[in-house]
Amino acid sequence: MSKEEFVLFANEQVALLTEKIEDDKHAPSDPNDDVSRGKLLVYQALEKGVSNEKLSNQELGVVGAINDILQKVGLLSGKTTLPALISKGS
Image (tube, rainbow, N blue to C red; front, side, top):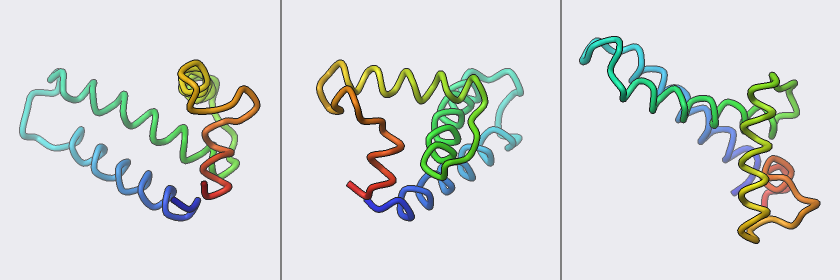
């Protein structure tokens, strides 16, 4: 997946999740909104990381946790980050 394809995918997911959170099909305290907010944070953080935008401390934590997990299970080397990998189009 190229960087451009990932950014498009992430932006589509952000739009879908935002719409889902803002719809009036369920109560404002519905647990599904919290699930959507969690996903939203991941997609926004990765999209910003790939686009070389400044990440908030919370977004840095999200991207850092994802990298730690992917490195621990052997999907990324210790010197590679997911945003860098996506940016290379690998």
